[in-house]
Image 1: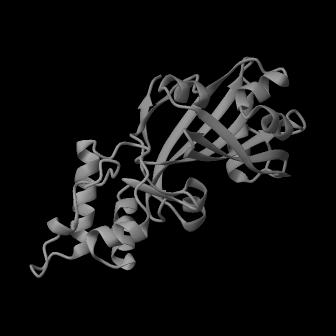
Image 2 (image 1 turned 45 degrees about the vertical axis):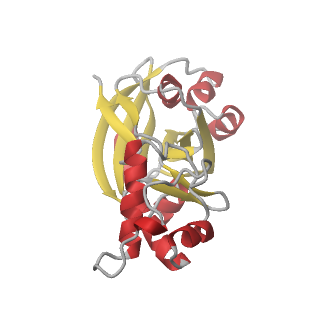
Length: 252
């Protein structure tokens, strides 16, 4: 085996033929063992499907099936145009009165980033109205954001803010990549969590595409309400977290 090849738990010689264990399952077991033993570290890129197929003496369909099972288990992540990577270890994510994504990620020694997927003004639906303490149909600004750690999507969030107070917040977020800094530029120097509600559900196709994971993976659903220093409700958020990428820690 070439020293540069990280895949060591399964190879053509170790695949058992004719004993009722499918080749794809043996490949899954071998790669899973490599990940568990640290021979494949978080962030490592697996060889291309064609190389793996040649190495194991199977066709690409068999390799693709094995990688699909590993992705469904949350062990690897396939990224369009880049390849398949070993998933990072779960990020400890404290939930408390002052939850700041950038600080949490930086504290774990990882690089935080944020992207604004969409922004629009709309009337408040029942969910937003109840959490913001406003009338249904009142104007709100909706921002859909993706937050990542070391380039891996950690959260897909729909954030709603009352208008006209936060008109232009989308432009500030685009400039700063941080909601905390965007708030500060609009005079909100501090804010805190009023309430959090937890749930879970499988990822649908759109969620999976946005979070770069396999459909059906379990998502943690976190509903939040934030208030400013005067206790006024300024933000309602529904955030989706891949359950195997974060460990929620409640600190109140």
